[in-house]
Length: 160
Image (cartoon, rainbow, N blue to C red; front, side):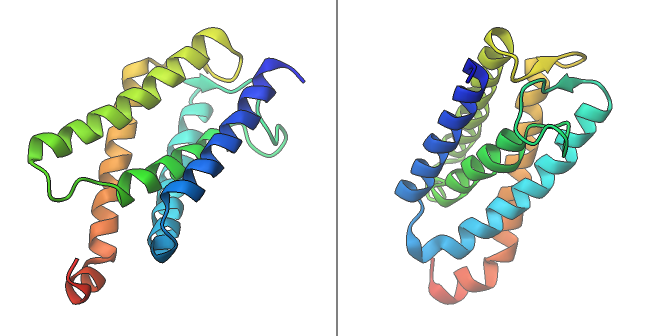
């Protein structure tokens, strides 16, 4: 097994462990909704950038099924978005909330740049790191707004 597949397996193991550890059982419904919503967004963006020859994923699971990275687009990013939404600092200042977005988007973008530079998991063709950062920001923002909209009636009745 080459280093790329080892990284993919490690990404799955880490992500599963993060979900088990940081998603409370009583919030699993919220987690599933956020996961599926983010997966929908990353599916659209992921396929779009691959089809437009902006990014290539030479090493990936399900090579025949999709040209995009199943691991990152359909599992890791949506799972991270779950953690982002469930632990969002609602009662903090606007600056703290903005920094929350910045930190999540920056850490993911840095990891992606490292993977792009040192592995064959992702190749930027007509893409730059800042496009990743911007699309992450937009999709995290969209998922947050969707989460608030969808659970608004529940949050009002439960006093959250």
